Image (cartoon, rainbow, N blue to C red; front, side, top):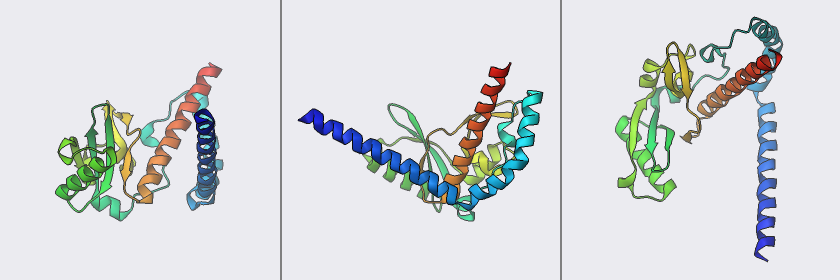
Length: 195
């Protein structure tokens, strides 16, 4: 009986996940950003062919992004590193000041992980301007997702952040970044397969 219940639960979970993916694709296809990218795609195809012929890899800092961060993000965005016993998590949130940001993120993480507020360990709390100042991407808004650098290029991007905000420009910018990184990876794999 328990096995049958688990099987039904798994089926419902898979169906719910499939529905979320389909809804996400539908919302993306309906967005103005997608339509704009679709119009630019024709222009980019010739550039992609030229890059693949020259075997020059795309620079992550040269990616053209359509989404720009909102004024709200540029004035009140903070990023912190949550040091959990099992791993580190990157957390983004909007706050009025550094102290407000620390208080909000500590309270939220304590509630999410079911731990005492005193047990939440944060490091590297940085404001939007601080992230811009230390970043190197040509697209200044991408700098909020930079974690490490190797010479003149970004060597690590924020992978699985926790967004404690509903600002759609921040979420859109992160999604565009990872779409471009996936495109770069796919092109490099195609080049390797051809070579």
